[in-house]
Image (cartoon, rainbow over all chains, first blue to last red; front, side, top):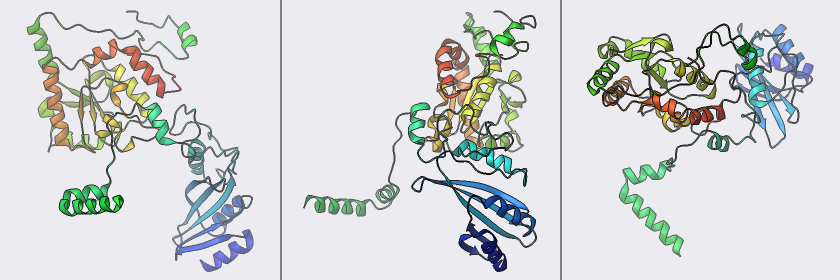
Length: 189
Length: 208
């Protein structure tokens, strides 16, 4: 594992390397290096299985993070390769030629995050949503609750309980009352 | 009622789909029989031969499987799972319904023949349950298709389902389970609600 990390550092200028445990390592590469890095991991390091591709919306940094999780069946280790892409008109190299299964992940990411993968077959088809006409729902500037309330006829009468308070009132009613009165007197003063 | 046959192939170009295989005449209300004794006999017969449409729409369909086994044995109530909407009279919406599933639910419901009843299973069909603020799951099932009985819970056990069947039977015997007529009566309202969520409407307005 350690030698592999050294090779990756040399070849692809990998940054932010954190080894979570003996069999799992995360590192970040540049967007332009990603395809080569993934190909290298597949062909030379034996990471033949693409477990999944995940996307994260870092709205504060104005970036999307894509993570490619690979697994090696020979020595049972995992690597996760992170890369960052800009949030405006996001687009990423498609790796459907390396793993046919990547088409599914990319299609899902295209639908839920709006990240384009040019050249990937059927990437523009519906995956989970049919006829979606809003901004992609997994982006953090999409207000799920507001959309749901506007669209799906919420049934009135839903209320929220503070779990701690509720349990206190039910299990220790005397203590809860004392606590409440103390809080009230403190507030008054 | 006009049955559209294979001769009306011009419809195919107009509507974008083939109308050979179904009738798209709008639903009509069916008035109860004037003789009360006969109507009661009808209700009794309907209540005792509920056949379930075996279409697992959500996670609750897992709870329906034990019903068919020897332990809960739903056939002692005269109920049985049927493979197609045309043969069944009870549609169980088992749990959350996403918009994509809603499309299939509506088509299946419309293809069922009268008498037909709907049971909402689980909290998700009542008020959205734990998916109440989801972008893709409906909150209230009764805005899209008429519901006769609800079984609350997340998820309700097979015993609760059997209790729900008993309730439904009582409603049918009392002549209150008039979901299909309600659907025909408020057809425009139901369609408007359905079209509000299903944005790529690529099917006929009504087909059976």
